[in-house]
Image (tube, rainbow, N blue to C red; front, side, top):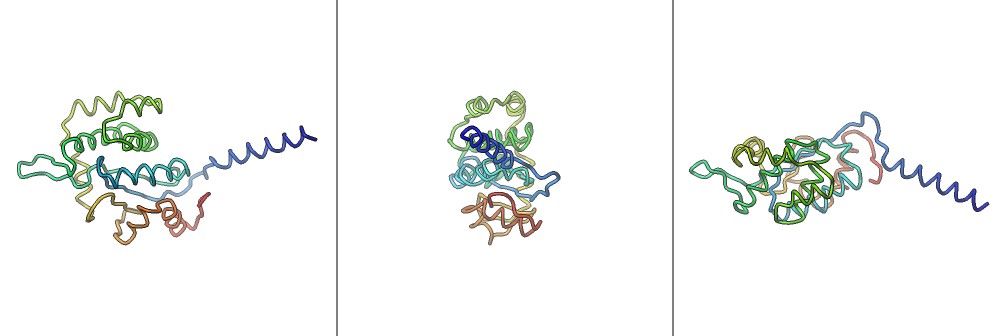
Length: 206
């Protein structure tokens, strides 16, 4: 009897684990765009405490077309040189993030960027080692181009959106100031509600 009970528990345990990671084939994706900067404390908190747990731990990334735009409040000065809100170090880190995004899919990119945003230094090597990711192409990208060149397209994308501060989150390619408080404070709950409203589908663990 004990052996049979153990078998049932093991069987249902395996099924439960399988169900957790099951992805609906051809599931529709909700567009989420995050405009941010690498050393903004609010951006760092949002990515590490809200976005990454939702996308990775709750497995929302499969149902998301996620775009990260590492530029934030950077501007071109009168000389046409790029300046960032939190100084030169932030411009450098934004460029590192951009190179990560250019040379990896969003799943790997989010892992590396979230890991790096847990600190204020360039922890690329440490984060790459943690996740066993080859970042040779990322380093080549950063060493072979200027920061201004790397970030140019992200600056152009940011200029198209009228927001007052970062993080700024657009849903379905639309930035709505009224949604920002909920998106930043209870992102996963708000994501689930937006997904349900658009596709009439309730995701697991919502």
